[in-house]
Image (cartoon, rainbow, N blue to C red; front, side, top):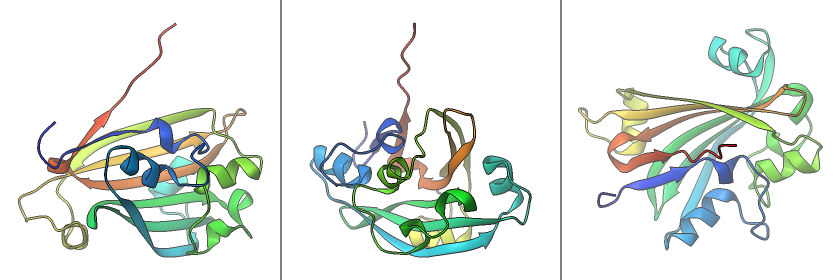
Length: 180
């Protein structure tokens, strides 16, 4: 692992937290000797784009709930994460607001009866747009990794979708799969 590079695994972000109320990002950063924080820059209802509609299995333009965040590692912006929920899952819950959720959103979803049983992730790379470059403090020539994750419940219904943008030179994704 290179200097300043973060190796991330998705498992802690799709299971309810067992860290005593700490969200997965803060817990993972602390376990590695760092300080993870986040700033929720927007939350509430929005019309689903075609990408979000495909991920959540809703019609384009359908109302969904979004939480837009900037993730920080030791005060350095390290990820832009937009998380989307179907309206029937998140309407009227703390997911609609900008306050931090004790234990994280996945723990709240579990309390509401929505537990992830399967996750699909698509990873890509591209040049960030100007806003992403500015927020993530990237040079014009530095690419970004993208990750689109959708979490399904036991009935194969999407309950959460995440669209993430990360500095490629500071991030490596790790996947460990149990076979058998």
